[in-house]
Picture 1: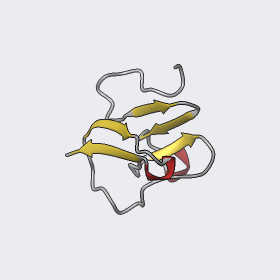
Picture 2: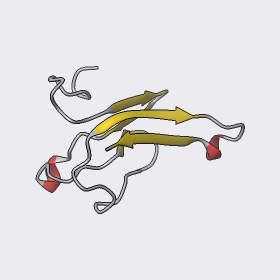
Picture 3: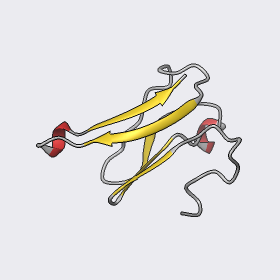
Length: 80
């Protein structure tokens, strides 16, 4: 989807689509584009990691693990 994913494979970011929700590690401009976060960029409520969770991560993959109860669903993202 244009506008969600980076245009270069050299960019260090992930985009995960799940139904009507979109999650991304693309750096936000309002923070001067310097703080890497995993966040929901489209969906019902705001969701993001704190600013101090990662120090210059290299993102590898993101995946959703569904549970019997939707509120127990998990999102795992892998980075080094």
